[in-house]
Length: 328
Image 1: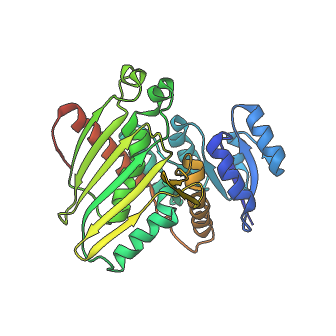
Image 2: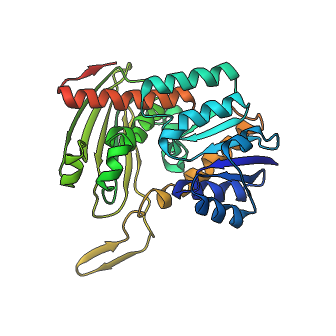
Image 3: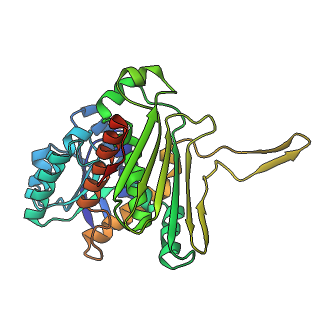
C-alpha cells in the first residue's frame, strides 16, 4: 500500500482524494492545505492525517505526493518533494513562467525522482483510442487534426487575472492533446483571438474566443478552436483525418435517450463540465501513477511535456499579439 500526501483540498484535490482512497494500492495518508477547514473536512472523510509541508516531506511513511494546490505553489512543492526523494504527481501547469519551469525540472533531474504532470485528457478513453487507432495504422498517415474545446460558461474576470490567461489556463490542455495525438512537436504556430463572451475578460487583458493553427514536421496540421462559452454544455471533440479515413471522438452526453416526435429529435446536452466529462480520465491517470510508484511504468506525461505545453501557450500568445506565425 502506497501512502500519498495530498497538497490542496480544493475542488480538484477532492477529485483526486476519492481516486486515491478508492484505489486498492493507495492510501490517502495526509492532507496539506493552508486553509485548515478544507483540509480537516477531507482528512476526516478519509481518515487521513493533517500535516504541514515540512512534516509530509520528512515523513518516511509518505511514498508519493499529489500536488493539487494553487498554481503558483507547484514549482516550489515539486522541488521540495524531489529533494525529499518522493514520487511526484502534479496538476498542470508546473508554473506559468517557462524559465521557472526549466529551473524546477533541473532539480527533478538532479534528484532522479519520477514526475508525472496531470494532463488528464490523455487518459480519456475516447481520445486515447484515437491515438491508439492512429498508431495502429487504421487511417494511415495523419494529415489534419481538429480539436474543439468550449467551456459551458466563462470564469470570473478575477480568476482570469491570476490564471495566466486563456492559452496558459485552458488551451494548454489542447496543446498537450495535439502533441499527444500527433506524436510530434509542432514547428510553427499561429493564433487569433477575440473578446466576445464577457467584456470584463477583455478588460482583464485576455481573450475568450480563439483559433490556433499548428504545423508539424510531417506536414500535418492541427487546428484548435476554443470558447469560454457554450450554451449547450461542455463541448469536447476531436476529429483526425488521415490518408485512409477519419477518426472522430464526439461529446459524451448526460444520457443517451432521444425523444422523437413531430418537432424533431430532442437529446441530452453534453456533460456539464470537466469534473463530469473527465471522471474516467482522472481515474485512469491515477492508475498510471500507481504503476509508476510500483515500478511497472515510467511517467507517460513528463516534466518535458508540461514544459512543451506551456511553451506552445507562450508562443501562441506571441502570435496573437504580433499577428504573425511563429516558428518554433
